[in-house]
Image (tube, rainbow, N blue to C red; front, side, top):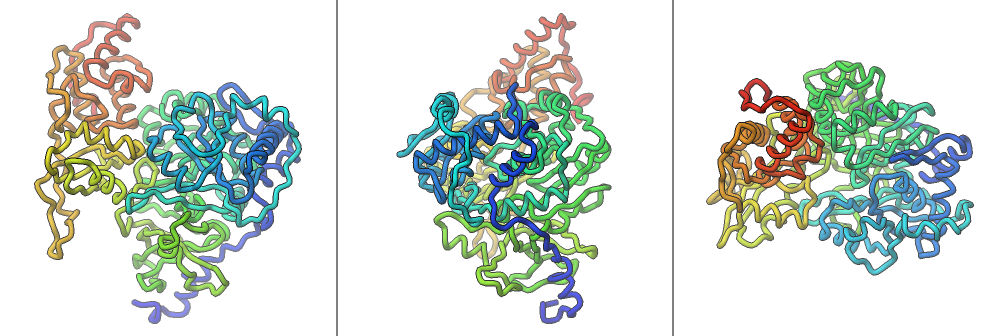
Length: 626
């Protein structure tokens, strides 16, 4: 059925009635102004705390003002991008606020990213000022501008006035620039204006809702745009932000302790993080407001969270439309979880390839319009024009909708159901990954003639990347290939598994037939280290644990966990299985410190001796591995 055949009543319903989202939001202020207004209302209330330090709203405002004056003296103002390469402390929030107060736009620079990727982001954005800290200076590529050390240079800022700087402001100024994976092998910077964030913060105070008494646990890296909600939303209503250090956010035990100890009432994270917590025995807390998003929420995860009596919200939105665009309160698990209805001042359309609305129940591409639509991609006018298209149902000059590439359909109640992707973009641990970027990185390696990357799920439902490689002359081993990719790609973009093929299966028209690619086998990959069999009961048990967690047969005691396809969440599963099998509690980072079976077995034996545990015996793994 085409748009022309849609009955007028149906057309009005999908275009107008279900997009009746108009809501008031301030049109002349920025994110920092919202925080300043709250500081005036509750100056003595605690605003942010973490790692044993806290700041009241008045102290946060004053500290950010001083740093803003310092940034202004270095030339930061409207239109200037400031990089942030910081660990997760109270100072991170101060720096974010200072950049906005100075009129600049902040660019997150994850300290864990490869130097080459950080260099690209700095050069592509023409960043001339970076806020860093002394311990991270060696992670930062050289730039032709100013490097401000927030710890070393603190005396400089402390000597400056604490009054708010007066900077020309327009709500269309860019608040932050965030880089996402690019299908051509080149990351793209999304320019998000204050307008979109101010609207989001305003409407989210009502739905899902936030109160002055709330405590928000901020666990997400700044390089993931949902971090903005964790920082800014509580600071606009007088609530409290608890900044969770990166090492705690990645470890289920310490994270559970922090959530309880801080009295967190609101917790936003990806499905991968919630799965990690549940596997570690997290019981949640009745009434805890849980915002889950970044990738599709499995029905099984929703059921497990609801069993813990939390208030569960399914959040959806691409970076290009300012973090979250739709949301749904989940009260019972259903066969297909809805991504909900549009948040205030966002509009959503389910369209066919000719930008015509499709009937209820018919799949189409999701397009998003309204206050959240970003300016586009920095320095990429062609790509911006391709994805940010003129609004097909709004004649207002400059009105656009963003083509999400997501396949969805309307439900009878006006909510939207997510069906999948129309292209080769996937989500890994909440991060967007364009498979084309990983393929380009692979094909640039010596000894690789061609590469295709696919996404699949492991036994626990976690998305993993599988690289299919056609080797050329002098092909690299899996170990060599993985190490080379780690020099340019973030960890979440490095494939977990590598499969070597003589040639790719092709469709009749000569394209790679992705559906015909063979599933990865359990065969041990070709590594630099030779296979050494287990020698002791502890090594045999651990080798079996690794084999089942990684889906690899014949794990040797000198094999590196991460070279076999391991990553942080899988390492945590190994730690959990060690606890079950040996009754030994290892620190979450134990697998990083002892990445071979031999090393980890020695660590387990040492811990057991310290705890005066009985002698270790090899156990039947089927009793423990689910």
